[in-house]
Image (cartoon, rainbow, N blue to C red; front, side):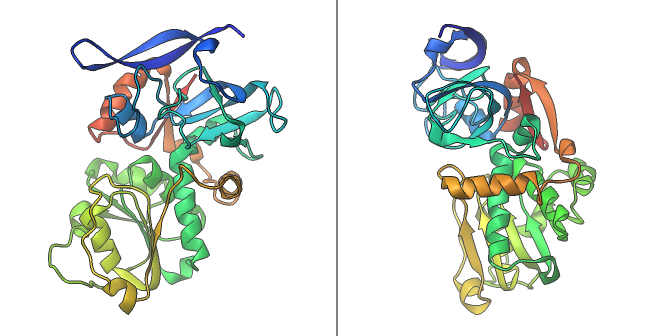
Length: 330
């Protein structure tokens, strides 16, 4: 099959700078895979921003098309699991990392990376969730399976204006939880309350410098996307038998704490990895995102842009100025 399509391509120039251009590519340029998908929507993630500036921890080879999320329609398939016309979601695995990603009108991927779009979600809504919503869902799933319920108390969400944070707040609010959002952006307060946060605390309130191993018990659960001392402070502030799910390191990959929250308060720490999540769990989480956990006003959590607007938005993400989710209409 020969067919041209638009794609965002990151390339290294003679000055060793990484430049972004919208170019025409051909289907034959795509990697080998079982299923060809016409992408209707993608979503922007911090990994895409890192890939766009040549971060070799994300993408090793350039020229490259980032985009770790894609939702669209099967156009050709060598797999009996997927038929032409199926609506599908692809997130995680190697998409957009070292495999040409969703910031293009077509992708070609292995069949075992693909989830059929569950009833209750449109392709657009699937990308309002994307990897961020799926990760938030994995965090919430871990906390709920550990016994968290609204009667046990407040749930803290750090990095609350990012994709994972905003979707976690909205889902937890839908499930009846009292959600406390942590932010360093005063201008985001109204937005966070609108999507379901019942309380907003400044970042400095979760940056304990006292050196004490334990603080007052406040939170029955934590969804953490930032790591570092904010996570350490949150762990010291858990109630007895509470748990925290961690999925990010925006502030720091280091964690300086003690064992006391775990051995004196019986707390549990869950590490969340959405990239290599088993398919059975992946399908289960997507089903919940389409039904019980789906916020009533999902569209409030994202704004839509064109492929041509992506480079400017990636710069905002790198500067920490993005708010909520950005989806890309292909």
